[in-house]
Amino acid sequence: MPKLIHYPLCPFSRSIRLALAECGIDAELEEERPWLWRRVFLELNPAGTLPVLQDDDGNALAGTYAVSEYLSDTGVDASPDSRAFAFFPGGAKERGEVRRLVDWFHGKFEAEVTSYLLEEKVYRRFDSRNGGAPDMELVRAGKANLRYHLRYIGHLVDERNWLAGQHLSYADLAAAAHLSCIDYLGDVPWDEDDVARDWYARIKSRPSFRPLLGDRIAGITPPESYADPDF
Amino acid sequence: MPKLIHYPLCPFSRSIRLALAECGIDAELEEERPWLWRRVFLELNPAGTLPVLQDDDGNALAGTYAVSEYLSDTGVDASPDSRAFAFFPGGAKERGEVRRLVDWFHGKFEAEVTSYLLEEKVYRRFDSRNGGAPDMELVRAGKANLRYHLRYIGHLVDERNWLAGQHLSYADLAAAAHLSCIDYLGDVPWDEDDVARDWYARIKSRPSFRPLLGDRIAGITPPESYADPDF
Image 1 (tube, chains in turn cyan, red):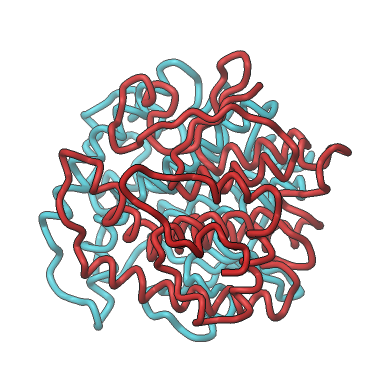
Image 2: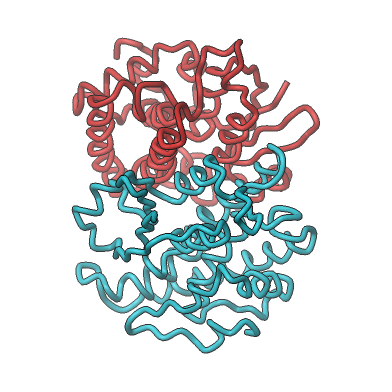
């Protein structure tokens, strides 16, 4: 059984956990706290980023980009056992649009929203070398940016069925993974955009999402709405 | 003929210019200054990032990730006319290693080195809303980080032939694209690592690299060594 080294409130890890579940692949989960920079972990991934997927022979694939494209390359998403999820469905152009949006959420959304909120409210809490109270100016900046990202999600879903087109893709899982981390902190203003909220409700009710809704971080209790499909 | 919307000192644009040349694909170049956030450009790529590849029908592929995987998906890199360059050569695992390193340079190296130096020394110079003298603390941080990245390149090339393995890959082009921008500013301490320097000399002497060595930005003259294959 493959092993996924992850952190429960890491959006990159969550996106791969969702994808593995959509593909019907069981993986053993091993928690890593990336702010510790443990030598044994850096030997697996010198970049120090999560997630890392390790196969039974110990071979490691490091980072969301390598892992998602590897799973797509090896065709596990198209296996007959799966629920017909494909990371990058469609022809070359449609796949380009999925990847543009994966980049949007794992790159732009991460830089403008998730990194601020997770750094200040979660990582800083546990990192003794970098600890202290959250910088509320950064928290406010992340929350302000989140509003326009929610409207962008609403705009896309309004024109399409899922973010990148007619089919669920890795772009949806990436976006939902980031939002789910922020939702754990109670910081998503769902009233901002009804279409975005409906899209999230559709993903949240998928069986692949259930394990994420059961995650708990010591010392940080999510709001009740976090695990409620009718939030 | 496809059109590549780029900026001469943008490392992402440069990596795709190199790749197109390695594949033997001619593309018309159109310069965009990303700090202007022009509406007409944001309609093509709402993220505002470069490069954007437009085909003859006006379809746009936005961002390095979508463009590189699209070109690989459509197999132009494996065409008999090309110089046998492949973006992601090898089997699924080898391709995973290429992608890990693409992520390293377009993600980590960009965040720790290139973004500091280009923002402070180039973009800030031209951006009237954000102008002023460079923040020398950020410049120094970028230069300090660059040293360990050079040693990492040396370490990888010492064990392999190219960065990700036996074959030239998009990881080499991504890394060389970032270094070439910094080299234009005269800020690469090549004495730090001889293996890294030799690797860069090998890439710099490829025909695909020649157009980059001819780039000039108004008001910023590169050092003579910039265009010299025996730097």
